[in-house]
Image (cartoon, rainbow over all chains, first blue to last red; front, side, top):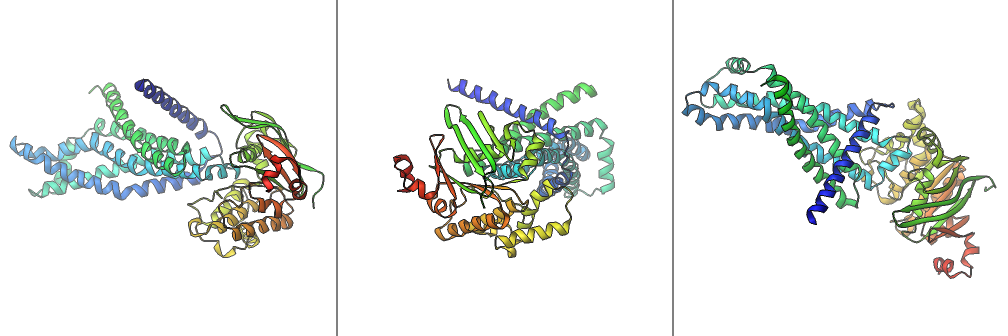
Length: 256
Length: 245
């Protein structure tokens, strides 16, 4: 019985989120376009996450290099450290970790902001002020999240590689130029392109889930907290599911 | 001030949420220049009524004619144009937290009137803030304001479009007696200065006594009586007397 209730609510949630996503596509391509708010949201979402993403990316690159070193030394292939770290970061760890941090920071922030706007009637006020709140709030935030996450991932990858370079130099002397040569010699287009493309989907997932949870928030301040929390959980799970799909699709297209 | 031209006519309005019938063939007329207070117990459907009138909720049945247009039949665009002529003061004020007072006031102006000049915007912002006695708060954030000040700013935001009708949803709820009285005086002053018609939803008898030219009683989803405060307070009907005792 309990499983039956869970299954019903799971499918209801999936259905409601699908309808919400369909409404996003209907509203996004219909005028009036909220360019000014979109640019503002891109700045807010991108800028707000930059320091956290940068810090975690730097530590990620540094720690990965330090953790990898003993095993690589044991097999006598420590020269491959830059290439290995680079491929791991660019193909998988950079997009996923940055996506999860983005979900925690931006997904929860969008969920809480829209949730509190809902319970304090600000969304209704927007509607009576001649504004389509779905366009103004949901479309702009989701698009901004979709566009900004790839930018953040590219920056995070670059910062991670710098962290890795410092990690290598803690044990031996290696010039930055040589480090980058080793990186670029082992990096191919099919390492970078699918990884960047999937981050658009990660960003979209974070934006749409955050907006969905906040937009339909109920039950006062308790509901706002719940919206923020469930936005992060759902977006994080979606990132892993999308990652799994992206690997399969990339393998099909590039035959790797 | 009041004349016999109706600005809002509600006929046979029905609204239910599942099995919970909130409005059941509700009828009401607001005349131009009139201050009409709809009294009802908490949870009796007052806010549902006012949200149906402004088009935030869709009625199950009935006609809602506002300034000559039947609200349920309007397209999104037509509803937007109508809303520019009908102000709505929310119970929770609904000021945008992330915007300053000036931005809050400019928001409806810029959304409804696309090509308004900055000088004109500044003049209007100053005028409405002066009307509510809070010209000095123009660059403050809503979080820095007291409950009464937020209510005044919300009213100023409503006034900036120079509406024909203002809908007030529980304007004195959550305010202390003195601030509540100030808001009541402000509602009367606004009606006088801007020549608006007002539909006020409340359970506050002090508001009904001081601000209402006419009162409608909402009971069990129906409009069970209308009249002046004097007429209704001397009614023999125990359901109506219960509001005044």
